[in-house]
Amino acid sequence: MNLTQSKAKDLMATITVDVVASDYTEKVDKVLKDYRKTAEVPGFRKGKTPMGIINKKYRTSVIVEEVNKLIQDELYKHITGEKVRVLGSPMPIDDTPIDWENAVDFKFVYEIALAPEFDVKITAKDKLDYQKIKADAKLVDGYCADIAKRYGKMSNPEVSIEGDLIFCAINQLDVDGNVMENGIKNDATVAMDYIADKKIKKQFIGVKADDVIKVNVMKAFTNHSDLGAMLGVDHAAIHNLTSEEFQFTVKNINQLTPAELNTELFDKVYGEGTVKDVKEFRAKIQAEAEGQFVAESDRMLKNDVVTYFIDKLKLQMPDDFLKRWLVQTSEQPITMEMLETEYDMYSKSLQWQLIENKILENYEVKVTQDDVVAHTKKLIGMQMKQYGQPEGDDAQLTEIATGILKNEEEKKKIYDQIFDERTLAVYKENFKLTEKTVTYDEFVKLASAK
Image (cartoon, rainbow, N blue to C red; front, top):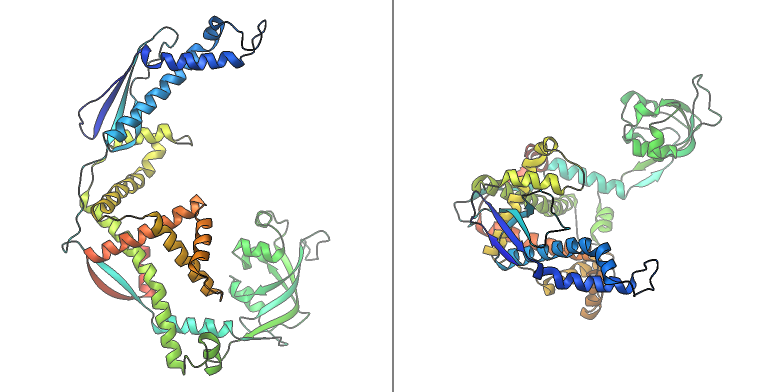
């Protein structure tokens, strides 16, 4: 077998594979002999069929299979052995039908797309903003209110006020406003905060037990998953209601009274004596919130790095080949017209993959099996501590980690997690970052704009 690669031009090259009979005959003959041992042909005992009949019946299909195997193996060996940085996979150029019945020597020509040559070095000239999120008073107020509700007390007043939870008997009504005999019926709690229509929400304020409210549920509840759960039907049934009018009969009113911001609450949340007053409580909530926001700031930095390098390097890509390759290899039928709308996103994703690989290479970012095990053990220890369990000794953690890492999907997640952490460290150490303090609302607007 002879395999030759042409010189590259515009990130394209060809690989020609010449196959002669001696390359595949021995393998074909072996396969056919094995066929003969198991072939059941009328008029002959099993394993005694003449080779002439076996050849006539199977030889061509076996040649096709073995030659194609041989070609794929040789292409793979060439690409990996010569370190050819291909994009996609080799595609045959000539689609002329092959005379497998009569030909003994074959020539196959493939075109390959090559990755562009480039380098990545991050210096002080590479500048980006780093958005540091500050938890402002408005956000801290919201967090304090949520905690106060979480530790609040539930009561059952006679008359409802805004925000109460109203437990109701719910019945579907017919066109005349009467309860449908075979309609939807269910008992469920109505949360006023989830009623989208303001006029309908007002109907639930000032009610008491046995009061009746008639409501168009599709107008009142825009979240159809929640509405389905309240009516006791699946999501699909919501779109096929024979009537959207329902009767809500009040059975009970649940009112949550938030806990006061005092020492009793502070001790419950953070442990006895940790927080002394409201000022310290708010400061602790602010610090915790800002600590949680770091992950979001880091995520934006990563996205900014991707955009920065794609715009800076402007890698030339073999677009025509990649489009044809995507059409040919897509699991779902796809046309060039369909591809054009999504190709830019695909191209940028591929460019970033090439750029990131170069960064990993240049900055020697590596993850070993020992790193993965150590990281998994750390995660297990943190989880145990979170649930108040003893962390366990090193042998126990190793055993649990080994079990988790047998799942390839979980193992990949942890590999990716470590790579993300290490590449983020590279960006923070090498880019010239200008820290900008923003509120969470400002950050959300900025992220949405990007």
